[in-house]
Image 1 (cartoon, one colour):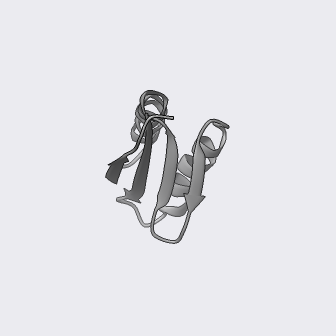
Image 2 (spheres, rainbow, N blue to C red; image 1 turned 90 degrees about the vertical axis):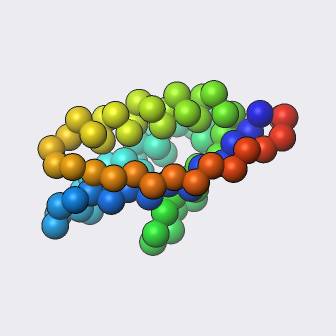
Image 3 (tube, rainbow, N blue to C red; image 1 turned 180 degrees about the vertical axis):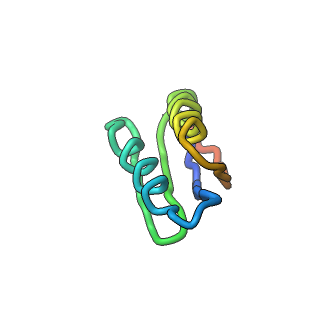
Length: 81
């Protein structure tokens, strides 16, 4: 099943750009995901299980960096491939 996620990262730090750019760059390293980024959020589409596996790893990587962060997500379930 394909799933789409709209995700926004809000680092609670005045120097927020490196954290956001790093997260987006890491997501773009996965060729199985379709990624579209705009000024407010990133839309990610892919196979449901793999998409959430990647999001789990990459949000954990962001949380392991210095500073507190908030992720806001909207999830849209899709149809079978």
